[in-house]
Image (cartoon, rainbow over all chains, first blue to last red; front, side, top):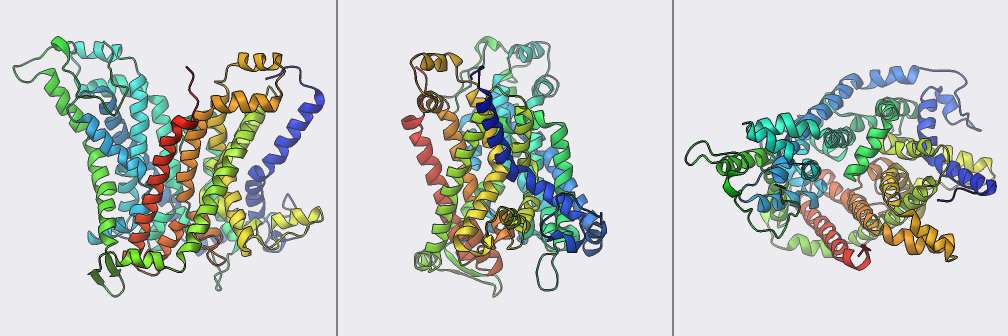
Length: 280
Length: 321
């Protein structure tokens, strides 16, 4: 706003920003450093910001106490399948709602929009019962099918539609005059142009699936099938108290990969997610 | 020819494309309109089937279930009419649950929007390093939710990091997660810090759309910074304030993992929000009928709030012209 800001004002602003940043940065830092501390040091007072001696025993125990590698794989492949599936479903539907004229499209679009109004928590009981009646409880199917086709993909469809509306129509018309069918026009012309929107949808879909917690604890009961968020809370001692060093190691391994990708590609992340206005 | 389709509701059926402007018909009845009709329907089929099967059908079922006494363990499913709704009104825990839900949602929205706006205004200054700080404030959004909550659970213990820091400056911190008000406050703060980056980014984008001339003019008239903020910034970014408030309120009503990991709804019902209570009833006490009734209640609350906020947009959203 103002170019000629006094030095004092600038120092004050920086000070305020740094102070506000503490709760944003400190927990992650604390999680990672504590995960390398021996148990006896975790609650040491005064707390040390950097571990004095590195201990990897907590990391080893993560894999001993639970099939953590398997759980990691579960989370990764479920998120990947859901992301690819959502991109396919939402770009097709979004394109049709934005670009093709067909009878009933307004009514059908309103039907789809209803999905935006219904939090998935509302439908968790009937969904459990539906999957139970077809024998799919304690499988990964509910965690794949519901996000790919249900309420979360409705938002994706909405975003894709908003994007396709803004595309200039001349390109497609030229393609159609050249004899390309609808599917070919979509695949070869519209979809390549929609890369920013696809990126945004991919990011939030992946994060959403990666973070899912209520659904896994409702649908899954075998540790080998657990996803990461669910597995994290299982590292407890005989009295049900959390084993902090192990929990923090497992939490670090869950949080850090996405965080590293984010730091590398933060521009795309921030603009993509801001574009969608969605909460993780 | 532009495609006139930027409005969803209230538009009549699309007019036929004049004279086959979008490709000439190949055969008699297999016109481009008919092909478009087929393509359109096929393209939206997966989404429609999914919405019908995983959103609309369960919504109907949850209403149906709520009219039944359904104990999963005993395998009983009896029609009881509005019995569950009567039970809902008489439920001695419900006032506490609704109170927690209300306090949590209001607290979350107020803290979240205020902090997001403050951060956005601070980072919108012409200062070095704002991109770095933007990244820092945004980073919790991408950190796994349960991992984030576990760390905060660790920090908020009686002998945890937060009280360690407080002790270093001579303060004696409470046992955050064990006191009624401090537990609620803790859950709110953990949630705000996790997600405020998203609202901050939306506000930053909105702030950059405010024309600088307006501030110039206001300065010439001698308006203070606070007046400029109130009279120029807030009205001009009000559409974004509306959007973020809707997203945040609906998000607040859906919070589950943080509660389950941090407090399990306690102490008492001080952090038992509606979603957590519905989970307890359905999946811990196996009362699917009553759980469904709570789901219906949750849905009605979300629906009402969304509609009310949407209606209010004319009142408090400023539009140019």
